[in-house]
Amino acid sequence: MTEEKTEKKVEEEQEVQEGQEPDMTDQAEQTEQNMQNEAQEAPEEAEEAQEEVKEAEENEDKEQVSVESLTQELEETRTKMLRIAADAENFKKRMERDKAKLLKYAGENILRELLSTVDNLDRALEQGGVEGGDPAQKLEALLAGVELTQKGLHTMLERFDVTPLDALGKPFNPDEMDALTMEASEEVPNNHVVTEFAKGYTFKDRVLRHAQVVVSSGPAEKKEEEQKRTE
Image: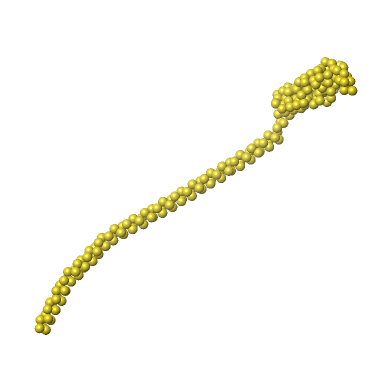
């Protein structure tokens, strides 16, 4: 009986081992398959990693080029701005020089015209100062020289847009005239110019000098009547 049990137990253990052997074989095959799959996937992952590295390098190169381009553009803009600022400063200095020169020689043309008047006066005095001769002729020559000088001055003034104001007999205008006094007049209406002591002049559209005038206060009789009424 004991031998039969022992044989039966051995048979059972053999059956268990035989049942386990297929499981171990399957595990080994699965492990080998996994290793093969990993071996196949490894090159693909390596290739993807290389592509990612390459793409990162390209992006870095692009960023470097972009930075360099922006730096170059900024430098060019800075150079242009400095050139514009220098041109503006030179233009300002040139305008200041031209302005100073214009102010310095502003009266050049007028003075040049006055030289002709001085020449006419010199000639008139020379003729009037000749020794001997008829005094009447000398005076006439002097007057002719003065008249010529006066004519030359008026011509010069007109050339520079300086014109005399017509004040005599006109209504008093405080914008163009200065009243020295008032006097009665039978001929000139009240508040009109009786006498002109000094002519007024305009330069273009501006009053250059006011006329110095005497203003009429109206007829003397009317003035006396007004004084009596006041009394």
